[in-house]
Amino acid sequence: MFKKILIGLILIFLTGCSINLENMSYEKIIDSSIEENIKYSNVNEVGYKYYLPINFSVYKDDLYNQILLSNNVYYYLNVDVVSYHYKKVMKTNHELDDYLYYTFEKDGKNGYVRVTKNNDYFFVELCYNYAIIEVEVKEEDLKYAISRGIIILNSIKYNDLIIEKNIVDDAIETSESTYSIPQPENKSTSKNVLEYIKENDG
Figure 1: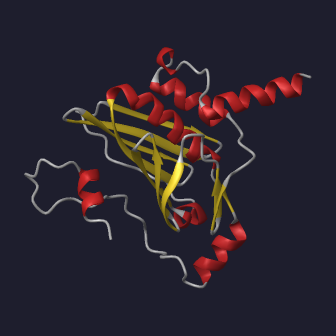
Figure 2: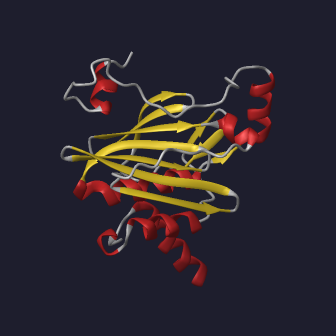
């Protein structure tokens, strides 16, 4: 009986039902999420798999780079299997004007969340478990984006045999990964970065 109740509570947490994020800090949302051991997945890729929460879908699949869609908002997922294979530490720059910057670690896996304000939107850079999610949302959707993003990152499970084979066969680019997203040539443009990516996609 206790096991059924526990499974029910976990499902409620993963799907976001009946969870009052407003009473939780950004740090608490992340710390609580990375404590969960998500043993199942619903998206399978070459060398890794992960759990995609309810109200999310895969909008575009490009192997290790995917665009996820939830509530008409695009989430950009990059899974760095090379850094996973070589156990590289993933870092970013912390600026004084960041709206939020928080680092965390569990079982040797380090992560960070960095949020910067862009006019009326907030750009979220969430990194953990050798993967990163980037999304731009309004302030009222910030906790939702962080909570769902960390659930996805925490759920990623890697297949060492497939990753090693692909790296040995040079099927995966083995140079050091740099996490930088495309920027408009005209820096004075009023478009935000994600609008620029969508306009120039393909």
